[in-house]
Image (cartoon, rainbow, N blue to C red; front, side):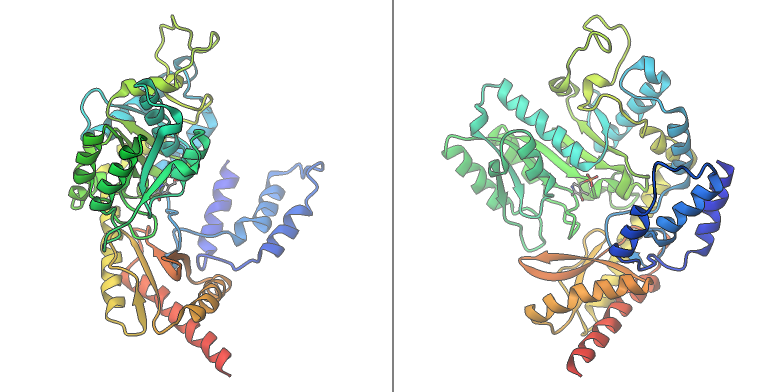
Amino acid sequence: MRQGIDHLAATLTAVRGPSAGVSPEAAAKAVVDVDLDRPLGDVGDALAEMSRLWLDDTVWFHEPGYAAHLNCPVAIPALLAEVFVSAVNPSLDTFDQSVGGTFVERHIVDWTAGRIGFGPGADGIFTSGGTQSNLQGLLLARDHALAAGARSADLRIVASADGHFSVQKAARLLGLGEGAVVTVATDGDRRMDVGALGRALATVADAGHHPMAVVATAGTTDFGAIDPLPEIAALCEGYGAWLHVDAAYGGGLLVSPTHRHRLHGIDRADSVTVDFHKTWFQPVSASALVVRDGRHLGHVTWHADYLNPHDAAHPNQVDKSIQTTRRFDALKLWMTLRVMGPDAIGGYVDHVVALAAEVGAVLGANPDVELAATPQLSTIVFRPAGLDEAQADALLPRIRATLYERGRAMVAATRVDGRRWLKLTLLNPLATTDDVLAVTGEVLDVAAELRQAVAR
Ligand SMILES: *Cc1c(COP(=O)(O)O)cnc(C)c1O
């Protein structure tokens, strides 16, 4: 372990940018050449090989030039906790496998529920990520509707067009099919259009179908838009629809000292997804599904004689989870809260929100840049100005590839209404406005180079 820590520290000292620009072909070749039946038999040799195959070429999220996806640099107390999570290796399914861990997880879940504004009846469970949290939230909504007498074929899920694709995947996995998902248009701020939601719910009801759930997104993946939660909650109450709030991205606002009000109305949700491995700076995996009424978690309970028989005297978490063996991920957030406190995490969130606003303002005043929207959370969707769609299709992927090869900056890509854009996702609390403007500056430089090369 000490050798490993030294190796990691030495590697970090030598990092010079977010990427080393290795190609998929080169990365694959070196790995597949390893004969897994012939061990090296030595930790130092294995570490050296690991570096050659992966670590030397990996992507670094703590580098200020990294501005691509929703990956975060990690809070060090969480990393420390991770060592204990793996070294002790408890499974959180029953008390007799985790002992105090059961209560650490429960306390963290209760605390999160309190931040959401749920009352004492709330409960929840840690999951592997937002995809699983959304799946479980919709599973509870489905079984709640079925228990109330709805027919499976009539169930519909209503989500905004900018909602996360895991909603469609969940519909598939739940046996409803992605055809059961009704998408609602967004408004000018790319939030779910409440008028359109009202019409969609009316159409579902008029057809004799049941709006089993509305999925509101608190922080859409591309635009960071927060759907109008109070208005959506009121419509859900009117139609008897379960309200699931996907706060995988925006959940960090729960601890923000200055932006918490933007989640106003989240306490009216039936279930909420929070990804701690995004805006809470936790190592993957760390997510939770939190429900306003803990009794709904009973929809996933199954009694196994060897684990949680009906007469089990001990508290257990397996009753609330779709997993059995389950990591003690809660310890990471626990240690982060105990060492740094929630305001420190919230301060990081505030920093990246301010960063996006500042950079967005500078880019908005730059005639060489086209912005798709004013930044709302910590993403910026932009591209070099003056491109028609054919030019954008040709140029933008090459800009990204060139940046990756050069290794100083990484940006993401997306499509908005069919048009191609570049995207920055800012999640580095150490990055400054100048750091991010260096990234966009490099984008513009590379764009100019590539366009000149074409013109020549
Ligand atoms: C990232 C994300 C998810 C999926 O979460 P994972 O942890 O990647 O499974 C779901 N919804 C939104 C809005 C997200 O940004």
